[in-house]
Amino acid sequence: MLSTGWIASVFVKDLLINPELRSSSDVSHTVVAVASSSSKANADKFIRETGIPGPCASYGSYEELVADPNVDVVYVATPHSHHFQNVMLVLGSGKHVLCEKAFTVNATQAKILCETAKKKNLFLMEAVWTRYFPLSVQIRELIRKGEIGEVLRVVADNSFGDDVEQKWGTKHRMVNKDLAGGCLLDLGIYSLTWVFQTLYHTLPREQRKPPSSVSAHMSLYHLTGADEATNILLTFPTSTPSNSAPPHQSHAVAMTNLRIASDPGQNRSSGPSIRISGTKGEIQVFGPAFRPEKYKIIPARQEGQETPAVKEVECQFPGNGMGMYWEADEVARCIRDGKLESDTMPWEESIVIMEVMDEVRRQGGLTYPEKIESTAYPVQM
Ligand SMILES: NC(=O)C1=CN([C@@H]2O[C@H](COP(=O)(O)OP(=O)(O)OC[C@H]3O[C@@H](n4cnc5c(N)ncnc54)[C@H](OP(=O)(O)O)[C@@H]3O)[C@@H](O)[C@H]2O)C=CC1
Ligand SMILES: O=C1OC[C@@H](O)[C@H](O)[C@H]1O
Image (tube, rainbow, N blue to C red):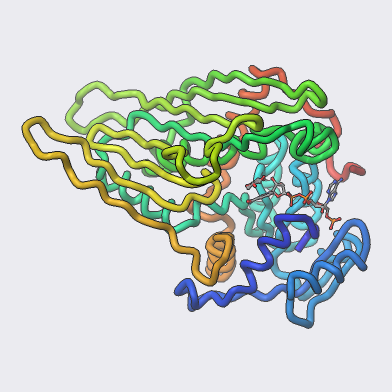
């Protein structure tokens, strides 16, 4: 564990849940070391409070962690601003990496990380946990099988509804530009995840094409200049149909907002956060875009036929976990099988999504300090 922040504690608690409860009998996880950049005492406190069973080493620096010979793979859970430097440190020590989203601050940094992992023959993955939910796997499969026909529109929202000044102030990583804050990199990435995992990832690899157009609007937070609202419109070229009919285009809308919420009542009364619309029906996903809870398949009614039955599927979270264990299982399996990247979150796709976010920031006028956009390594942060 590289960092002892909020998500590190959520992730580690999921790691400690018996994998057999989720029918994962082929892999298991052992937390062998925790490092905090602030102090060894902080790492000790994290081990105590999260209930990691011994033996588990504690370190007061990331450098000590990566030198520990018992460590196979490091989970990087620092702010976005630090991912590039931290992942370079881990890869440099010869260890595999699972790095929190957003992968890096920009696409050039992401490319360098992937090239470095390849050169060193190490596994590397952006921790987009939502992709590993059984619900996501099922939805991608339904789309591939043509259950809702040709998908021509995806609308995805991941918005919070916060009193931004009160809740995030100016220093919190959510709004602090020194930590690559803003809703695009933190929350919009999930809206883009839904767009990409439905319109891009469902195609055979050789047919996946980056969006042919990206247009974005951003509103910047008056106290820090980080984005507090971002809306993106994307166009994807679809593959040429086999019957030589002209190819259609698919459109996507990816939204994120700190001041208004996807579910303002926080009572799941707001309808779907994601709508995947195809020529033969629609899949609606309910719950936060990062932790979806349920989906519905709504077949299109055919002329002269009865209203078709809607199918509803709930996501189960075995062992009362958060749902981060599914991505952890993927990491374990990939490393066991000698893979350098996960097929579900391939390097190329992380890079294409970072390129989209670079373009969105360019159009929205959001820049970050030179030091954290830098591709130099090592840089003292
Ligand atoms: N997958 C998911 O659902 C979620 C993912 N995330 C992602 O995880 C990452 C961390 O988020 P979160 O846990 O909420 O953040 P926190 O602020 O809670 O934790 C970040 C940790 O990073 C370490 N750190 C190192 N350098 C700095 C620095 N200069 N400023 C602040 N922290 C520093 C600290 O740990 P230490 O002192 O121990 O070194 C700190 O506790 C982000 O990339 C975020 O996008 C966040 C929430 C949910
Ligand atoms: O990745 C995330 O998902 C869950 C949110 O609560 C968090 O802010 C974000 O970083």
